[in-house]
Length: 152
Image (cartoon, rainbow, N blue to C red; front, side, top):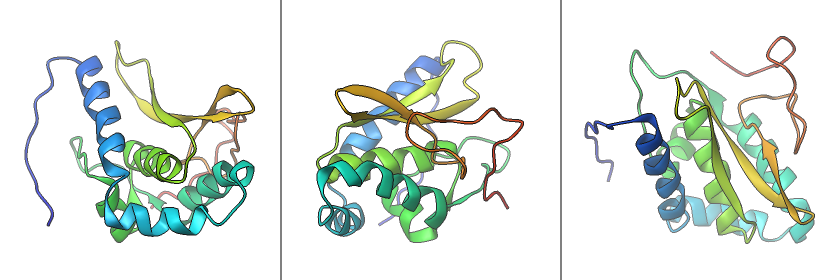
């Protein structure tokens, strides 16, 4: 069942907290578990990069229509598209459900909150990843002038 509602956030920091809690809850969703089962077949060290590529190429990047829309990972996986927060949320949920620590990383949440990406625990430290940028990899995000997305 898809539930729709309007949530008003007193600040961008509260919005960031709400979004981070969502991916934690999402790891138990059947659609997330179904995909995580595929990634759990890979060696642990290969999972983060495989999940990143999946989120980059299997989920198209589409901006929200006029205002922020926050949906759970199952909705994004079933639709096959989402904005930066949807793609980051799916990445984090799939990583966690596959045994890989991950979290969202909001860019300037105390200010204008223009973008959200993710961080994944690899080789003993947190490394940034951006599922919206096709030519990015773990710990390598190109500047916006050379970034490529599958935006439509």
